[in-house]
Every structure is written in C-alpha cells, then in structure tokens.
Image (cartoon, rainbow, N blue to C red):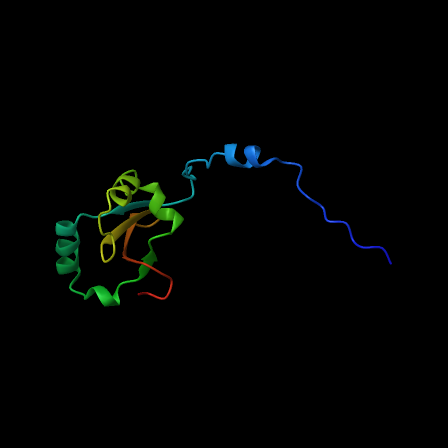
Length: 111
C-alpha cells in the first residue's frame, strides 16, 4: 500500500494573517441587551425583591451582550462586569415589551 498524501490548504500564512475578524453584526431577531451600571443594578435588585442568586445567568462571552454598544468599551477598560445585571428587552404581543434580567457570570457553570 502506498502512503496517504496529506492535503494542505493553499492559503499562505500571510493570507491567514490578513483575514480580519469581522465586527459583530446585530441580527434583527436578537433582543436588545443592556448592561446596567452598578448603582442601577442595586436599585433593580431592590425593586425586584429577590437575591441575585435567584436570577437567571448569562455568560460574559454570550453573543447577545455584543448588542449593547457600551459593552466593548466596558470590557476594554477592564471594568469588572461579573455580578452586574443585564436588561433584555423583547417585543411582546400582549405586553408590548417584555423585560428580563440576567446576572453576568464568567462561565457556563455559574462561577
């Protein structure tokens, strides 16, 4: 038997390096996500009357967070976003607009 040939990509290393990562494009079906300020987070938690541990979670790497224009700026500035609330606004046939809150966590495990 003859040895198998290895197929290699015809793209050169320079072509791979030239590939620029496209910025995230918001899809029309993706609901609007808004990261709340620390003070606003505390205010919302107080008005909801529930501890932060009982709220649903969202990971820091979730693509929905990229729909918030200030997300990239906060992330680049090194601001701690863990534990902050995210307000998600969805259109609703009955209520007009449904608002949900999520807590930002670092991984899918919730830690």
